[in-house]
Image (cartoon, rainbow, N blue to C red):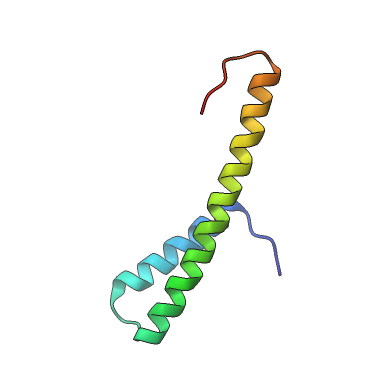
Length: 68
């Protein structure tokens, strides 16, 4: 499986939302798109959490104020 960038994942998620909002999908297609969207959403959240950890670590290593 190819590894997509965060931005590519967001684009994929946007395309899924647009297709779901169109109302042109069958119920089965909608459920499949929803499931794929949730998978992508969870991957994006994971990557954001990882990026936040890196930033917090760098900030605290430099003696700057810790943030949440």
